[in-house]
Image 1 (cartoon, helix red, strand yellow):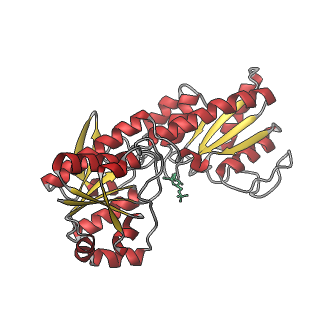
Image 2: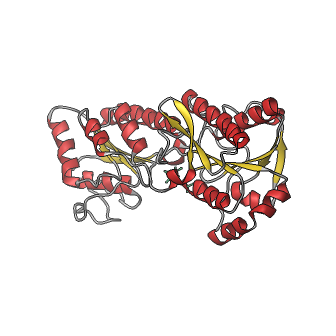
Image 3: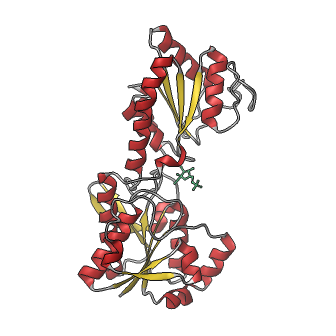
Length: 341
Ligand code: F6P
């Protein structure tokens, strides 16, 4: 068979491990040809692909990012591509496609599959918010990076008796913040699933200092939001220490804490550092298993399906099950987390 493989959407540690695994299983074990499609669906639409042999994936297991590249495609261009899916497959000479990506990629994969292109999907995201799989690769690496940041911030915060507000990735869900906050022993964990009350956050910080503690760490997801009307400090105003509060929720929150409590409070925006670099062993293992099962699914004709971790097993689940809703942090998970704050 000739199998196309592409990575689409934001990058994520472990993408190269999937590509390597697909090539090993397909080429070495099945005698297939693998075509690496450049820049995700854009490359599929533009007919940009190159053969991937075993030598081409040598040494990429430990590398972050994606050797195939990734790009965004405008909605109209995508729609047009979907309508020409048979022609696109023919141009690249592929019988089936393995599409690796997050929510947007899975949605596109479903569209191509509905249009008759034989597609198997592999989910990825550091945010861990894809439904129908227990976890996605990339998440573990991001949590490690974020936890290390919290560990490091603790020593500097304590030395200066400061409050540190660390803003972590997660536009819609708080998995990274919840897990890194728990692992790093943050004193406040604020996630999009649960709007927070700024007064409550300040009370927590004040109470810590009144117990003789010399610092506090608040982990906040980029998508977390205050309860309406609870931020009293106008966006863009200088705080009690003259710092501007322009920016995302981390910066605004640090300004609020400084204003309410008169305590020096600094924001740290971790950003894309959480997405870059070498994947953890756990992410490499999961990505490798997903790649192996994706090739098996192609050979079994399980099109329109996606690899998923269910307990300890990899199963194939309909792509549509993963894109119907986001996997948010359930209430009992933050109640557990709160017990140890
Ligand atoms: O991969 C998901 C994610 O990491 C989000 O948490 C974040 O908001 C987003 O990607 C940012 O991605 P980009 O800067 O590539 O748009």
